[in-house]
Image (cartoon, rainbow, N blue to C red; front, side, top):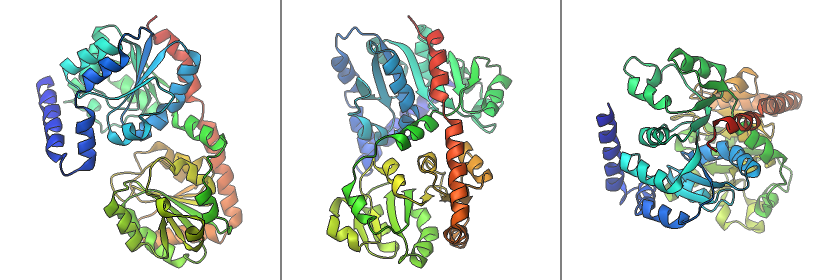
Length: 416
């Protein structure tokens, strides 16, 4: 199986190189790994300070791990933080984040790359956020006696680890010194395959969104001008083209009553143009907006990244994209501000979304008609919306604290 794993990763790298001339994200992935190990070695150089290595697949996992990185740095000011990303969408946005001392792409998972990377970084602790279980990196860390943990992990019975043919992937999990899970169901699954170094700590994303909601807001004068008339605001977060057929009739019906902030998941020119063509009313791009143009617009379209978590404070309602496709995007950023949530039908893999639906704080819909009906109920029932807001905030704050739990356990797992 290791042979097949190596072949699959080699093919993956080859396909990305072939796609690079045509796909910007693939091009960024390839370019970011050109001469990467030499760059890492040169950047760290002769720095002899102790180091801890955090790995995040992409931007969402970074935001999930961020409170833990910040807490670790505060508790261990003499330890340098090395942060890696697999995806360009994480690295390109956070490559200058001041909360880490070194930020790199993760080299492709080969035995040679793992050995070379660890030779340079020499971490006293390895922390993977949520997933991305890279065999060679974890195996090499284990061989060297470097403890590795995964935080905010979540597992489901249908995953390969729990199948009769999944022995190779189960072996990867044994390389962790400890697995901090989001819920007890995940911990039970792991114990069922013989892994005992597991516990339930919760989801560090709750700590992130609670902190974001409580922090001094970022100054966004264009958005302030856009919402200045006091009309209710719908925030459309991480939308995909598949979301637009459900959204368009709703926005057409309420176009004279709502202001809408739209932050697409992908900000390619083709995707931005599609939003402009499909959604009703005047649409203004954020990069081209000024106080005069936004006053006349009904939809403000964000053609940049990194602002979405700040936009929910302007909202009264939120539509979260992705669930008419492969899966729902981050609901907690909106939930931290008490906004009722609307999204498509593909949400069952996301525990917080399931729980918010059960609390009647979130409304999954199958089509445009269901979205209009769910939205109309809260539009015409302010008391119900305010009760929902209170229940949402109670839920989010009750789930916070995972960072504190993990930090309390890490000293016993860290190399001196």
